[in-house]
Image (cartoon, rainbow, N blue to C red; front, top):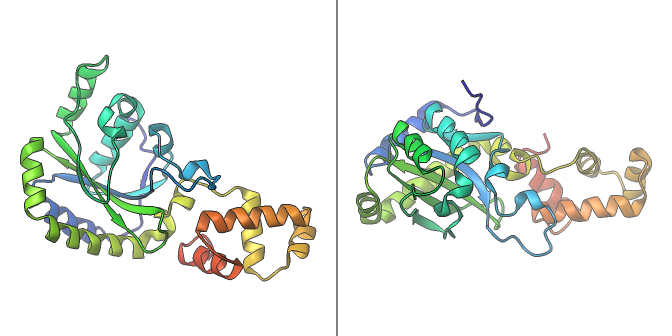
Length: 253
């Protein structure tokens, strides 16, 4: 059996069960939850791992919240073998509800893709993107899977859009409060180099740039470089805000 790279977050499964039950009332059989970034980050952002996620990059996410181990396995198999050829995967998604177009099974891997979808009982898919408080360039994302046809799923979700959006906001807040240290994209996609993390830790301990440079055998300009890039990554305006954000995201203990 293939090992699943993505691990479940440390969360009370009762919360996941309640979210699953609510979504089941809308015709959604499975879901996957994580935190992603806007498809186009600011031009000055040099952290490529936080730009639009390609399938092979999405596979590197270490943690997520899912309704079942089955859907985590589906996610991995889909990203490994089929996402790159699935046009729906690359469609632009807007805040709120996004109903994916029907899968195209006419390509070279079409029959295999259809078997995968049938194996997991998936007929239609949707994304629900929600803003989160930690960073204006991040979204909470619920990936929704349904045995219903696309039209029926769309009717169900649109008929109760406001209620669903409200409930998913609540579940998102709950999930993030418990798991932000694992779910935040900086940690989840391993965006900090060992050197950058050392600079961040020493900055948090109150060391000056000169002292950090002496400790890590770096020039002061090198320390400034890392601090500026860290502020950019955390969307922080100054060192104090950088340290505060790093603590709130669980990057620093």
